View 1 (cartoon, rainbow, N blue to C red):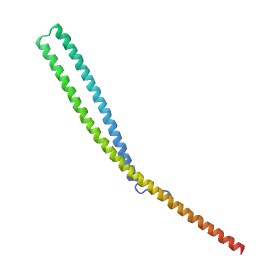
View 2 (view 1 turned 45 degrees about the horizontal axis):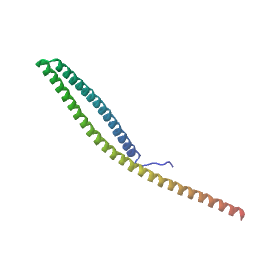
View 3 (view 1 turned 120 degrees about the vertical axis):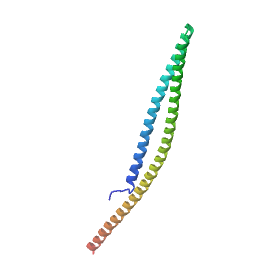
View 4 (view 1 turned 45 degrees about the vertical axis):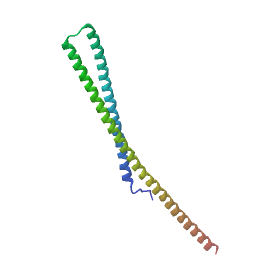
Length: 150
């Protein structure tokens, strides 16, 4: 008789949920890397613009040009701050998903331990049945020899 764990489907669902959460975390981490790269580009652009502004200011700028530079720098600063908020939000989501993953992992491990215990019981029962069967064969052989010898 083959081993049959009655909660096998539940265990499989627990594994799938855990895998799904791992995939979600990986996707969120990729998105976080993208946001960090975008923020880095914006920061680099802002730094370049500041340097350009200082160089042009040293040569002399008119009021309208100064206002345009300042507006553009403010816009870039706003976009950088927005990226920071998106990154913080994403980090919070990743943290929550990791907590969910820990719980899902604990649940899966519970069912795996149940499966291991059930398998041990199954092996013991099979071993007992085998011993009973072999004892029966031994008794039958003994009785046949007794009849033949008598």
